[in-house]
Length: 189
Ligand code: HEM
Image 1 (cartoon, rainbow, N blue to C red):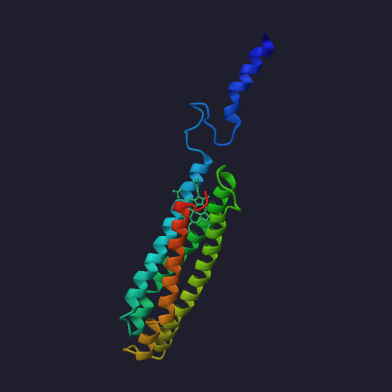
Image 2: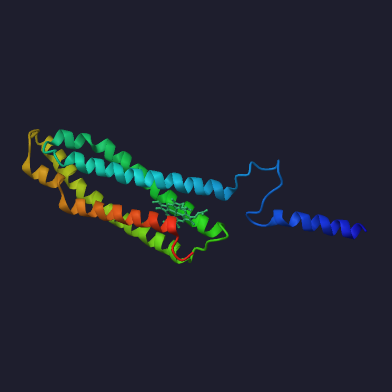
């Protein structure tokens, strides 16, 4: 009789021992650790995409800048973008890999997860090159300012309108949009 009761108790408790199982009411808020990690993954993705948009704003702004001072003044805005892309990029990767390992439905070796990691690395490499291209204009602007040449400069304008930078940032944008499509459709699942 006692053994039966114990058996029932164990059977009733079983679902609560499973990963992602419904837990006893009153003991948790109903928000699992994986839910929190997904929230952080999505917030990171917002920061990442937001930074890419911010870089577009900067690209449009420098398009018409041929004088050193206004070019240099965009420095703090660019730094904000760099911080956001760093936090957002790292966060999407770390929390994304965490989710792939932790959520029962997914695996780190799923095609769509591997695709996301590869595209993420490509976007990062392209983004770094974009930064190098646009830094040329800033370097030139600082040189001009230090030489006391505050007026318009054709070479500075040409650097601010870097074709390579424009193409590279377009590729970053397309690559991150591909990751987003991959995330939402999860091809192969
Ligand atoms: C680079 C490595 C990445 C990995 C390994 C990864 C992994 C994952 C995983 C496993 C999920 C499913 C979570 C769940 O259902 O609980 C997810 C969801 C999501 N991820 Fe990522 N992710 C990565 C990057 C990104 C990036 C860069 C973005 C945005 C640009 C992004 C946007 C999203 C969105 C919007 C969802 C929710 C989609 C849905 O379930 O409907 N992820 N990610």
